[in-house]
Amino acid sequence: MLPPASIPSPSTGEIEVGPLVLHAYGLILLLGIGAAVWLSGVRWTRRGGDWDLVFRAALWGVAFGIVGARLYHLATSWESVPDEWWGPFAIWEGGLGIWGAIPAGALAAAVIVRRAGASASEFADAGAPGVLLAQAIGRWGNYFNQELFGRPTDLPWALEIDPQNRPEGYAASETFHPTFLYESLWNLTGVAVLLLVDRRFRIRPPGLFALYVAWYTFGRFFIELLRIDEPTPRVLGMRWNAWVAIVVFLAAIAAFVWTQRRGRERRGPLEPVQRRPSMAVPRGRVRRRG
Image (cartoon, rainbow, N blue to C red; front, side):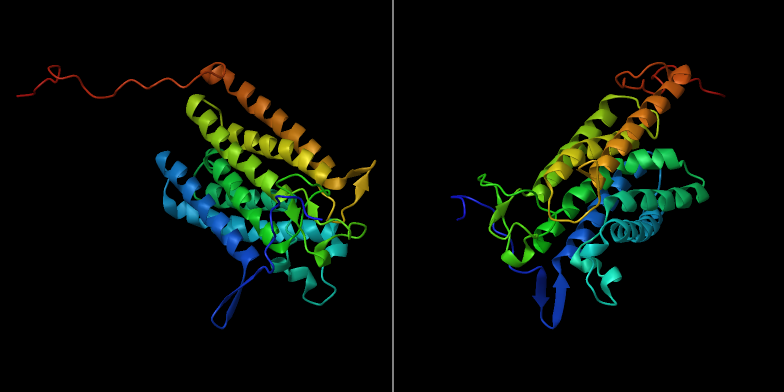
């Protein structure tokens, strides 16, 4: 029996536009990528960069990110891949691991930025909030695919899952934790936090990117404890991805501390940003040459 209030799932993840059949999962990924490029581009150009580099880095970053994401999924969740020749390539069915996407995409983007003669660390800090925004949007693709949900629950915001999409052992359960929604809200909050921190404090690059990774993995750990639908390996009774979240979180914190300590000799300890004095020449002090 459904709870008095719950979140209904879409009956299909496909959208028909005339003779075309579009997959909502792919459209949402494109929307997330567009949002990331926009926010990253605005932040990068404000730092003196140009849009052309943002587009080139995004193109290669997204391409390698998708490859890395799919390879990670195939390596850890092969059982969920469709048993067809096209199964390993069926990203429209879901199955993109963020743990493979971010390293692969970031490395590709860093190469493009370095070859252009710009600072990869500065670029990473400019793009960190945008990447998190893309992740917040992208999670809604799981909603349309009815995947990556959590344990059964009768909370008012429980997510309805069709019988054919319920994992083995949960056929009698009708509603589950909407982990896609939890992660999306966590990521959106993280975007606001990163923008505020970047505005209020002087952070040595790529410190903001390290904070982005720490923020995401901290929340993802608790979400992994709720998820049940995806068959992933377990280590000491805990999902593999939860262990990955712990390791990456600790690495991100260590990277942030190291980058900030390394910069203290140049600019002192982390402190609130102060307004820079005006560089305009006061009136009446301009010397005329005649």
